[in-house]
Structures are given as structure tokens and as C-alpha cells.
Length: 260
Ligand SMILES: Nc1ncnc2c1ncn2[C@@H]1O[C@H](COP(=O)(O)OP(=O)(O)OP(=O)(O)O)[C@@H](O)[C@H]1O
Image 1 (cartoon, helix red, strand yellow):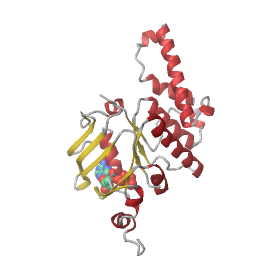
Image 2 (cartoon, protein in one colour; image 1 turned 120 degrees about the horizontal axis):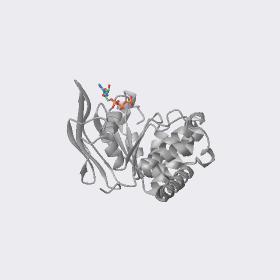
Image 3 (cartoon, rainbow, N blue to C red; image 1 turned 135 degrees about the horizontal axis):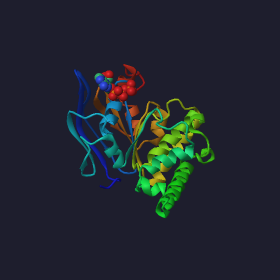
Image 4 (tube, protein in one colour; image 1 turned 90 degrees about the horizontal axis):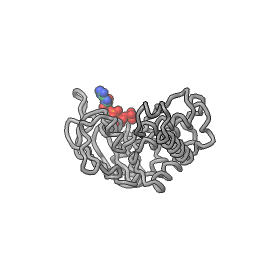
């Protein structure tokens, strides 16, 4: 399995009772690209993220990472393939420090027994030192180095979101699934998060599927944008092209402005 492979979603459909949450939806996420997934409330964005991350199972269609079929895999298996979901509400341990939360995330990827850890074998100490180094590097990349010793529960909300992002990267994500990452952030925090995401794409080659209502951020970050409405793809292309598309304006505003 190559974690940097292309994520390919083909013709997936999901129904909840009589509600067609997704109908015949296709989307491709190439390594190193940032794809925006936008659409009005109830369009099916979260359902699509849930299908990719193994929380929901589509009734039809395929989802593949490279040649590997993801449908029917558990969420932890999918995360292990390098698909990291960053939830709107950070999944952190509030009593631990920032560094400890990152060490815990990295610890899950280390391979040694509890007994080896208890008796402090040299290999374990070396692995711990490497885990600490990796945690500090990722903290620096997202701008959290000054906060490494702080108790996570006392962090400002924007820093907790950055920590959640760092945690997912440390768990080996190569494709980030970002679900409204700037909800609740102020302008300076939004600007910083935008820089961090672009840095991860350009310097680390990570790809991003970004669900976002803030069109300024979508324009700034995304190479390609897919628009959902009522479970269907109604437009895709560059941010500028889809955001001036009459079908998209109709879906968002209920009418097409006279000057569109
Ligand atoms: N578990 C569920 N049971 C029944 N209906 C559901 C379920 N999850 C989603 N839906 C319905 O599926 C449709 C798509 O919902 P979804 O949450 O994916 O939209 P969304 O684009 O993420 O919306 P928002 O921007 O408001 O988060 C909606 O009509 C929603 O009510």
C-alpha cells in the first residue's frame, strides 16, 4: 500500500431511508493537491467524508486509495492507510500537555511490547526519543513549539485545532480530510491555519480534502473545487469558475443575481 496514492471516489450513493444523501458522486484527490468540497447545508458533504473515513458505507460505488478498496474497512484501518480525518471538535486528552498529546498520537504507531517498555529496554528509550523528536518537529510545523509544555485543556481554541491537526499528521496521515477547520477561529487564526495547510501541501506533499463554508479560504487554498447540492455534484472546476457558476449561485442563494 502506497499511502501517497490517489484517492478515487467513483459513483457513490448513500440513502438514509427515503433521503438520498449522495447520488452518483465521484471525486479524485491526487497526492499533493487541495480539493474543496462545498455546498449548502444538507448537501451531503459530511456524508461523503464519513464514507471515505469508514464511518458510513455507501450503497453503491467504489472508494479506492491506489488499488486498495476502502469500502468495508474499519475507520482505524483507513486511518492506518494514511487518510487522516480532522474533526470539527478536537479529539484530545485535556489533562495532558501538548507534547504528551503528540507523544500519545505517535506512540500508537510505535512497535514494542508493554513489557519492553516497563523494563526500559534501550530500543524503547531510543524509540521514545525519536517519538519526542518527531512530535517537536510537527509542533514546529504548525506553530505550536511555544505551547509544548502547556496543559491542553487550557489552550486557546485555535491552538487546540492546530494540535488536532498535528496529532493526525503524527499518526501518519498523507491525505487530510478537513471538516470545516476554521469554524470558531478568529481572522488571525484563520490566516495562520491557511499558511499551515499550504505549507503541509508544498513542503510535505500532503493532499487535503477541505469541507468549508468560508469561500475566501476555499479560493486561497484549493486547486480544484467540487460543489454538492442535494446529494449531487452540480459543478466542479477552479474556485473562481464554480463560484461564478449560475447553478452554484442558485443552490446557495435560491436565485441567480442579475449581475451574475
Ligand atoms: N444518519 C442520518 N440519518 C438520516 N439522515 C441523515 C443522516 N445523516 C445525514 N442525513 C441527511 O443526509 C443529507 C446530507 O447530510 P450531510 O450532513 O451529509 O450534509 P452536509 O452537506 O454535511 O450539511 P452541513 O453543511 O449542514 O453539515 C441531509 O438531508 C441529512 O439530513
